[in-house]
Image 1 (cartoon, rainbow, N blue to C red):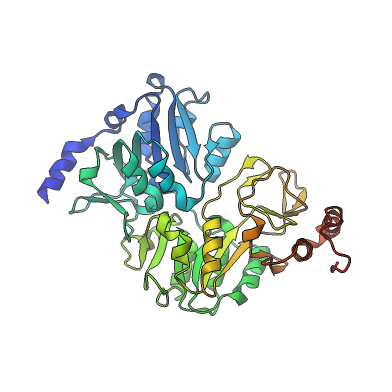
Image 2: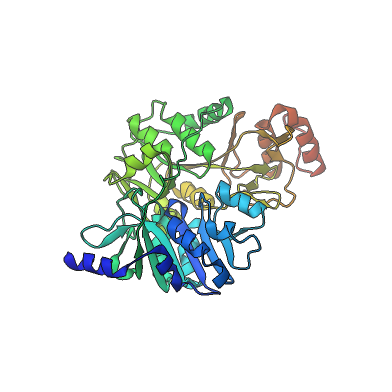
Length: 445
C-alpha cells in the first residue's frame, strides 16, 4: 500500500508543471461532462503564447473552457465536441467549437482504431488504498480515451462522486504519468425543471405503455428527465435503470420506491449508467452506492446488451420531425444544438427487447426569440441534420397524443403525425402533404 502513495507523491505536479507535456500540434482530450479538468485547462490556457494548433476534444462540458475563451482567433487552441452542452452550443455559435458526428456507443472504438491522443487529462476521485482513481461521471468513455493517450494527466477533484463500476470505471496510479491536486468549485448542478402542462400531457400519453418491471432509459435533455419524474408519481413498481445518462429522474424514482432493479434480466439489483450529472442530492445518491454502477457506453448502449432485457422503455427527445417520420434531435437547420448521442442505439435496442418500446418526445410547437410560434412537425427538412432515419422511428409523442409509425406508409405517417401536431398548424401541414403527394383522399382531417 505504501508503494502506491510513494508513486503518487513522485508523480504529483502543479497544474503548470503537468501541462508542460503539451506541444504545438498535439491532440489533447478532456473526456466528458463533470470530468472536465478545470485546473489543467486553466494552466494550459496560460501557455497560449507558447503554443499553436493544439486541438482539443471534449463533450457535454459546462464550461467555461479557458483554452477556448482566451483564444478567439483559434490560432493556439482549437476546441471540438462530440456532443454539445448549452455552453458548447454557444461556442459553436461564436465559431469557437466544431462538432464531431458520432453514435455514442462507437466513440471509444473511434479512438481505439482511428484517432490520435497525445495528452489526455481529466478529473478523477481521490486515489483509494489500492492505488485506483475512480472515473466517476465520465466512465462511459473515459478509460478508452486514457488507454489511447501517449501521456495521461489526472486531476483529483474532491467533489466527484465515486461510482462503482462493472468494468473500466477506474485507472491505476501505475497507468498515470502525472497527478494534479487543488481546490475545485462545487460541481455544476442540473436539476429537473418544473413540468409544464405539455410535459405532463406527454408523460400521461406514455404511462399506459409502461408495465411493472420495465427498464427505463431516459435520454439527454430536460423533457425525458421531466417525464421520468412524472413516472415516479405513478402506480408503477419494480422499475429498472439502464441508461446512457443518469440524472435526477432516477433519484426521484428511487425516493418514490419505484426503482428497485430487481426484475432486470441482467445486472439484477443494479441501476446501470454510462454518464451522470444532476443535482447535489443526485451526486450524493450515486456516491459509493452499490445499487448504481457505471459502465462503458460500448456496453451500455450496445443494442445486443439492451436486447437481453425485457420491457425496455426508451424515452428520448427531439427538436423536430418531418411528415416522413425523419427525426432531427441535434440541429435547427444547420445550426448544431446537441448531438446524436445514444438515440439510435436505444431505438435499435428497445426494438430488439422483448416487450420493449422506443418513444421520441417533443412539444408540438415552440416560440422563437421574437415570440413567433412554430410547429415542431414540419413538411420536410431544409438542411436540418437527420438524427434518426424514418426506418427506425417507432412511437412519436406530443401533448396531443402518441402514434406508432412502425410499418406505416408515407400517407399513413403524414396523417398520424398531423393528428398530434398543434391544431393551429394542421391545415397547412395537410396542404403540404398534398403537395408532397403523401396525403390520401380518405385521410382524416
